[in-house]
Every structure is written in C-alpha cells, then in structure tokens.
Amino acid sequence: MDGIGYGIVEFLSACPVNWAMSVPDCLKFMDEHLIKEFPIGEFKNVDTIDYAYDEKLAAVGMTAR
Image 1 (tube, helix red, strand yellow):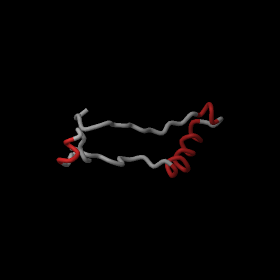
Image 2: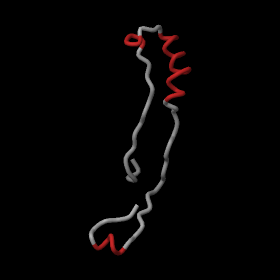
Image 3: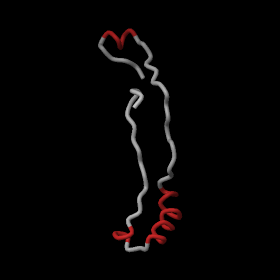
Image 4: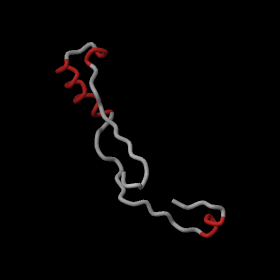
C-alpha cells in the first residue's frame, strides 16, 4: 500500500466439517497444535527499502539490495 514492496497476509482457519470435530474442539486443537507449529505475528515490517548505489551495477541497469 505504501509502495515499498509486496505484502502477504497469513491466517489460520478451522474447518470443523473436514476435520470431523465440533467447533469448540477445532478451536482447542488450533490453540494446542496449529499455533505452536505455525506461530502468528508480524515477522518483518519495513518502512522503507534502501537501495545502495553501486556504479558497476548501475552501468548494467541493476541495483544492490
């Protein structure tokens, strides 16, 4: 949204029908197992991207990251 790169939103979702569980059991399973395996949170957040200027790279139309 700020024009500094791509963004990905990841979420965990229960599926009581396919898991053959009640809704409370699904939520309990997610708390006890899924969140341990797939922790939720912000893993990387940047406000800007700094591109280092390198004359050799610029000569061929590239930038260093």
